[in-house]
Length: 80
Image (cartoon, rainbow, N blue to C red; front, top):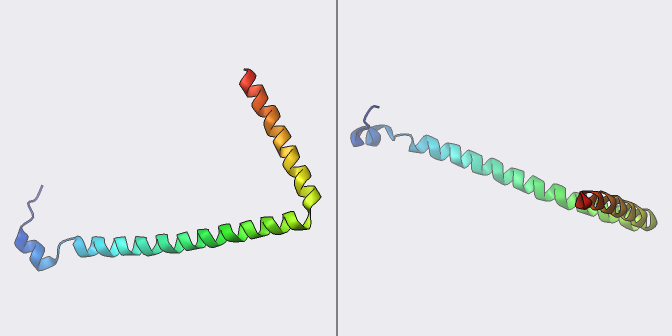
């Protein structure tokens, strides 16, 4: 392995600026993705609330059916 001299680092700047640029790029992309995820989850929650308000009976029946199925599946696994 080649030994890195301090003079070379001072003259060339080493790999630190490149690493910093990559990190900054990754940080920006992560921030953008995080903002999109938050916006999408808020949008999905708003749509869910709208559906429940528009179809309260259907929503209650669907939730009950899902709960019943989950209970039956859970009961079968807990007996085994």
